[in-house]
Image (cartoon, rainbow, N blue to C red):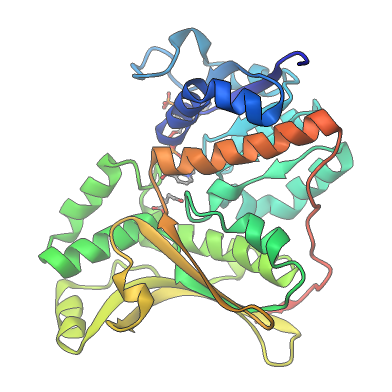
Length: 340
Ligand code: NAP
Ligand code: HSE
């Protein structure tokens, strides 16, 4: 067996701490699956003195720039937001590292730029955790459905808002109390406005559309309405009619095949529809493709451990490529569709 593959972790919060734990707890299995040991060289955080149960404090550093540029085989970015995440990833790519990130906000704004840098440098850029937490969704879209023509994607892609809407529907719970609960459980973004105003779902819808329809879609292209105007009375009225209210992300190819329409907004779902039973922080996504028909993906959409599962899955894929000297499929945006 060759020398260990080195991994730098940028961020040690909800997701980062779970990633560090998973890599440490599954070390032997990961070594067996990859064929080489994974060695975590450091974890960059804002405040290294903060207690982080289950995380080796000797690995903590406040020098994120230094760690990102240290030329490790893989850099995992789980800081979130645009900056400093973008500059750190650019620096990591320039120093030859493959990238694994969970940062949908960054990818939905600068995905094409980062893909280009990664392709030029011959490194991987993986982000399965950026959309729908633990659910394997991006790889199936990028690889398993690559031979088919996807025509529509429809689903619940934000755990926080689904958690809030479920509690309001089932228990008549108060919006602000449930939002606090979602934050305490590690589901919400650092600024929960991203969740409740639909920015997070819009970023995910943009990423999904890009992969499904082979075109470039950014978060700004997505029509967006959040869930903050949905009242307890709206939910009760929907319930009395046999409906539940969900925040949906919908992306579809136009009939002439020349454009895409991507939108995020609350919608009334009949109780008989499979999406109506998606509760708490779970996500579910329907993909419609010409040959496959309808395919449904379901699972935990948020939280440290579920998200870490996706992140570490990407780390294994990138690590295997480092060993064979290959990279995963490049970004496919040949269709160049108009966003309507
Ligand atoms: P979080 O709990 O707020 O953690 C962010 C981490 O980044 C913290 O450890 C923080 O340090 C560190 N950090 C922030 N600014 C930094 C800087 N300038 N330099 C170095 N470190 C910095 O966030 P999270 O929930 O883990 O989310 C991380 C990413 O994963 C985001 O992109 C999010 O959208 C994505 N994601 C989250 C989930 C989820 O369920 N939470 C699911 C899927 C994807 P301190 O700890 O010292 O403050
Ligand atoms: N804040 C996000 C959510 C995290 O609630 O879905 C997972 O992407």
